[in-house]
Length: 220
Image (cartoon, one colour):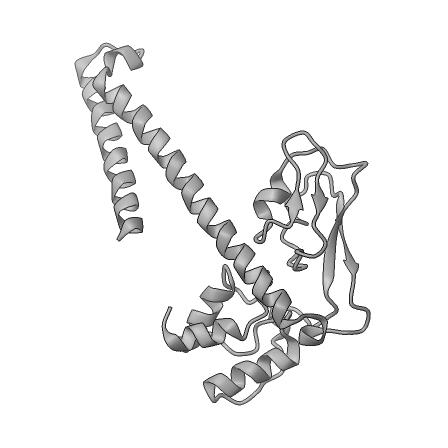
């Protein structure tokens, strides 16, 4: 992220809601810096957020793009514990780890950490998550603070780092399974035809090569 993108990212509310059309606030900030996105695509920041981005970029302020949503009060996710089945899908969806729980056990929201991103709503298979207005008539940055944004950004960075580690561990585990299959392909296959085994060997070797290339790219 270049210096301009970092300044823009610091001016965003860090709710990580994706309503701007990008996967997170940092990606939106980079698109802004590259001139690929408008300054009016962040509903949580509202009019004041647009003014902040206009000041940094030197672009004229614009009304919030309705395609990205509307400015409103801060929302907080609430889980109906009587209906929660403990599927953990909302835990995976929450970008700031504001939901506590484990498999087949009831989940609950950490109120002080919820950004109201709404990403947990569509993944719940039993529709037990609702949103509550927690700021009354206050909207945009009037319903959010620099401290809130700082905490959300820190929690999102930790969440993202842990996800990368988990993906790396899973990739390594799959690579080890593939390597074991290559070492004893006849023992890992129902086929005995040498032609079929050679085809399987080529497929596994290609998959391993792709996995290693992705890992190397991520470490560069």
